Length: 501
Image 1 (cartoon, rainbow, N blue to C red):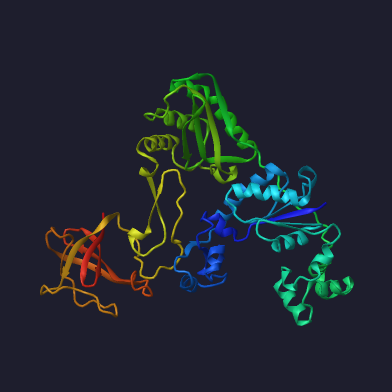
Image 2: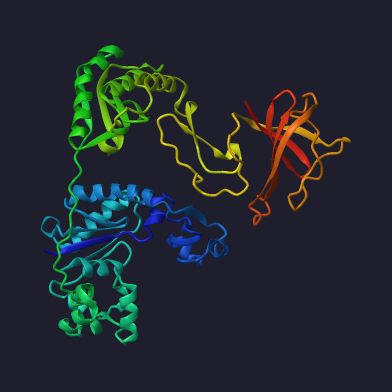
């Protein structure tokens, strides 16, 4: 069975959807992981540090590497290939293999050209194909094909094709280093060794790589199963104009939608609802759920979507439920004692969200950080919040518990003075310049004596960046009336950041 490998160079750059003519690079741990052809023309290379890459190309567009985004973007490529030739085997984002559909398309090179043309329509501006007797040889052929072209190794010619390739193409750094020290610089040099001696010296893994070097890759590719189609469609004959009859007619479709997913051990957490009116798309909206959608949830979302003013101007003839995000059912099963918010609360909040907008209703969680404002993490209701800062890190200079109950959107101008009215500050060594005796929590507030205070907690943030550097110290101050505040002093100026209730 002949194997075709399809390779999209610089896939992390392709996945972030940057135009091909734009110099762009994807960074991983401060170094260039992948860059576009336009960036390479400016001198940017893999492995460069951010600073060096930007010095070569000041207009360089930088993105942080997101492996999950790479995989999600590659899923569309796999789906497009499966429409032309089912049985694709994903190797990693940007690289996959299929059995060559040569008969249907009139030849191996012709089949590669048809697939490449389809992927270009998806925005994959450079895809290369390699065809050989085995997976290893086909991948090496794809990596040596020209842009938007294919390299076909004749049947039975894999060993001849591989013999002149450098030994570095083997995916084993330790073994490659040892072979180079032995003077074996090409795959042909390695393949010429007796198989029994290789197995004795390098073990089972070394023997496997030796067979690959000899073009004896007999292992078939592991094809993925074509994902089932979970989209559910309600066709209304005759079309309906009123919302309630449409919602009532949708019940059987919604129940079948949820049951079909459950039969595959899945639940839907994000659904796209499309409504056709008078033969064309009238409204489309993406809905998210904090847990997962049941039949009643889906019917409610359709009802709310159709109730928006101007959503439908003609009789509705079709409603489609498209699952955009599905997750394993076990991840969302209730615990022994239950869990999650009450269903009535979820429906009520989702109803409000449908009226005021998706971004207008948010949930609050905690993330890492030193100040209370940094620790607050807001996310639209129904979406899972993604923390920018990990909670478990040490965070030197952070406050001890309990946390303040009220965090002001903007810090309020304040003042703290000593016994003789002199302003209190913090020295460069983090020492208080005097004993705080009176304070004012806001610009128009009354002065009051200090009952107790704690601090300072000095923070020296981003000292390496002159523009973003910030040096502050936090204090907890309690007045004689029992009111407690979290204050900061920066550059000799006092601000009230939060209040303890």
